[in-house]
Figure (cartoon, rainbow, N blue to C red):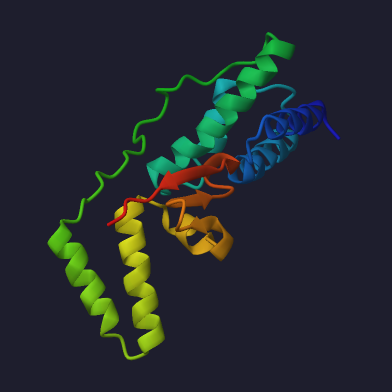
Length: 179
């Protein structure tokens, strides 16, 4: 195992202990360290990071940016251990991802979606989707959070929904209005 591979294992262990999952970044960094080993690199350089991040040629620039961002975080960690490590600048690649502007449904649009859901061939499926759409609209839950709810997470007398293991592994409670 190379020094970079050892450092990557330490980096991922530390970050995961802090609560980060690093599923995609961990895989990307393993690929980067493997490439560094293939070319005989002993440390991270801007040139190595940029060459690796911009592959495959013709891929979406946002993908290239994500690859470089993963290396940048690892390089910051390495720079504390090895001052000769070069940290790729954040503005090195164009085409940063832009978050889409969310669409806010009107009450009439939500009612229409729920009505159409009730018209599905399967009555159970129709009622399930109508309820799910109403729950999402009324609470602002993420779809994965709503689907993961169990009966024990809903306290109708207390007017609370408990969302467990939500984003970043946190839990929270949502108050329900009597309507």
